[in-house]
Image 1 (cartoon, one colour):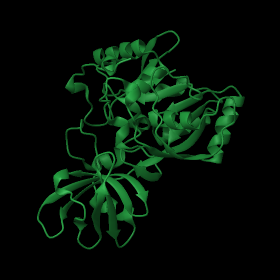
Image 2 (spheres, helix red, strand yellow):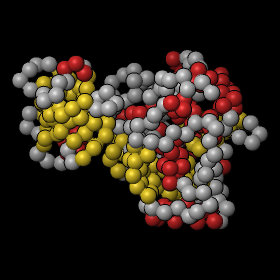
Image 3 (cartoon, helix red, strand yellow):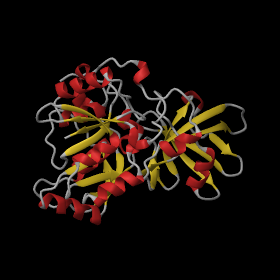
Image 4 (cartoon, helix red, strand yellow):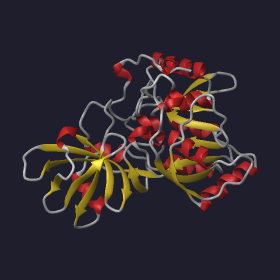
Length: 343
């Protein structure tokens, strides 16, 4: 297998720059793995494909405004920092732009009274390790001075609507710098209707990082290394999944971040237990899924880890057939785009 087999041309006009007016009014493609049949629906009709006793596993991570703009102390040089991962206490791994200005020992000031950081070292991923200094709650300050880190293929500055729409309605735990985008399509009302049908809504957490969306740059995907991301599944969620499996229900993973979490904690023919830690699992063809019966996902970038994940769940040729049809029918791609349910 070569990464070139997972490349495709996408017309620029199909890259969604804004969300649909209403979350659950986006398009929904149904891809049937067994028959290869493709259906076209509106997202709120996903409820028709769920049955009593099924489980909908959602990622409750919350995206925070991780892009900070500051200046080098005692200089007028502007500098940008993107928070990637909290390592310990007030030490974070970050990306710095321009990197040539970010010398070890320098201090960057974002708010003269409330927030600054010192560059400690280079990071293994090519960024920097920094220590932050502040006077009150760190995330309260970041919410005030930071900017939502929209993906680079959204070619505009963040707007007020992104504060709400580049987030799921069930987001709770601060920690993601990129969106679990499959969940963007759900409304609170739709989730309530799904629950009323007898489907269990099961929360987990995986704090999505930028590494999930980075293209694979090696010819052999098996040589690609994922960046680790924090995940957690508590006792209640583990019990619900065990119950569904015992009763013959299906597990619907809402997004690739949920897939990666479930496949990290899955134990073949054994009951799940609470689990917490860091995962760098990379799912690519061929792969034997242990826990996931259906995946809700958006349409992904070429040569990306996410495209390989869905190609492991369905055949590569079937995924590319679906993508070709999506382009013909003007589906919207990527973070603010339309959805696909693979069953």
